[in-house]
Image (cartoon, rainbow, N blue to C red; front, side, top):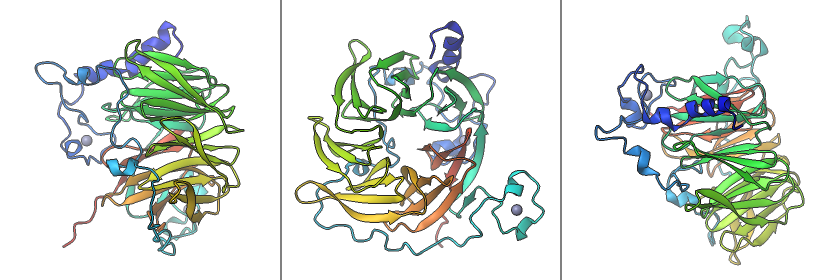
Length: 431
Ligand SMILES: [Zn+2]
Ligand SMILES: [Zn+2]
C-alpha cells in the first residue's frame, strides 16, 4: 500500500503479472477436476486456470475497460434469482424453521484442548471433539496461517488463482490457491476493517481510507472520505458503498474516463457505526451499531424505511430469494419479507445461544441453499434454508470474522491468524 519501492515490488509480485505469465517451473497441465468445477485438491499440483491461447493472452483484455464487473456468485449464491432481494410477496413462506428440531448427532460440542495440542490420550473415547467440524456434508482441505492478528476479510478476485486475506495486523496477504503458499504481504498501516472483491478489483477498508487495487492491471487507488474505520463494503448499481465508524455510508462511482473512483454520495441517518451492508433488488440495506437496519433506494439513495426490531448491533445482512436475513449480537437471525405496502416486516426469527457475527449463503453439493452463520462462541453453524435444520458446525480458535465462498463448492472460514479451506462433499449418487 505504501508507495515505496519495496512494497510496490511485493505488490507487483502479488499482482496480475504472474497470472498472465505462467510459472515455467510449475506443472503446465490444466487441472481436469478444476475444469469440471470440482477439484478437491488444495493445494492442487495442476493449473486452476486455462493456459494462454497460442495467439496471445486473450484474458488480459477481457476486462480492459477497468470497470468493476459483477460475477455471478459474488453474493455467495449462484444464479440471478438470488440477487432479487426482498420483494412484495403475498404468500409468506411458511416453511421457515419447520424442521428446526433435526439435529446432527454429536459429542459434547467442544474441541478437545489436549487434541489441539496433539496429546489427548483418550482417543475415540474422549468426550470432546477431535475435529474442527461436525457434519458429514463438508470436509476440511487445508489450514493456512501467517497473520499476527485475527483475519477480518477474505476475498477471491474474479479470474485469479489467488486468495487475499486482510487482518487486524494491518496487512493483506496473498495466497496461491494452487500451492497454498503465501505469495506476499502488503503493509497497510492500519487495521483492515473489511475487504471485498468485485471483478478484478480488491477493496480494502482501513481507518479513514478505502484502498482499491485492480489485481489484473496493478492499478492502485486511495479512496478518501471515510471518518474512522471502514467496517463493511458492497457493490451495487455500479456504486461502491462503504459503511464507516461515524455512521455515514459513502458511495463512489467508477469513472472510466479518468480511471478513478469518484465520490458519488454520502448517506446519513445511522447514529452509530455502519457495520453491515447488502444490495438486493433495487435496495441497499445497512445494519448498524445503533441496532437498526435502514433500507435505501439504490436509485435515489434516500432512506425508505428504518427497522428497529433488533436489540443489539446488526452485524451482517444477506439477501436470499425474496427475503432479507439479518443477524445481530442480540442472538437472533431475523427473516424479513416485504408487505403489500413495500415495507419489510419480520416473518421468522431464529434464536441462537450466542451473538451472531456474520451470515453467508451458498449452495451445497446438491445445489440446496445453505446458510452459514458465525457466532461469537468461535463457531460457524450451517443450516438448510428455509428449514433452519442444522447441517453441521465449524469450530475455530478465535471468533470467525470472515467467511467467503469460492468456486467449485469451496468455502473459507477465518480462524484466528489464518483461515481454513472447506469443500462440500460430493452428493452420493442415488442407485
Ligand atoms: Zn485441481
Ligand atoms: Zn480428547
